[in-house]
Length: 157
Image 1 (tube, rainbow, N blue to C red):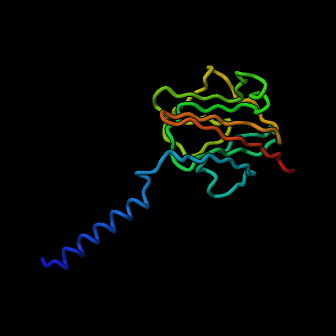
Image 2: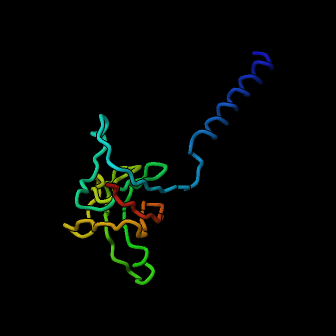
Image 3: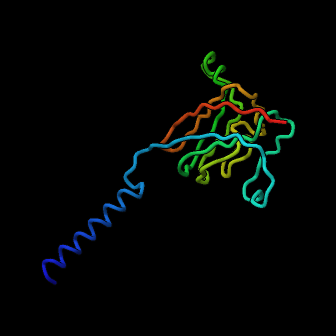
């Protein structure tokens, strides 16, 4: 091969490496973003893909909590912000833990089971949330601890 061909091959490999570096998260830090969404349940042809909590007796819309990437969760806890300001150990409204076999997840509904996780106290049920009140979601993985504040939205008639 000539010198020009070698330069073109090296340039192409360099561009491919730069593209992988910029488009993959191989070298990214632990910038994990958490989000929440409250939406009314809409019946449709895609409704079987994701279970929606039966919240007939609740006065809030179903609450979807999630992350910008899949996480292998070890602990999920929801507490009232007001309770956490006044108590050192606030009452957990919903607390799930996993010892070893948590399945990587990107989003989940409040109150529904997450695959590979179970309630911290056997048989515990999630408490109902009040619209407009502030709550805090605590999430733990093997290498990450984070929190996210949210306020559920009331159902519309």
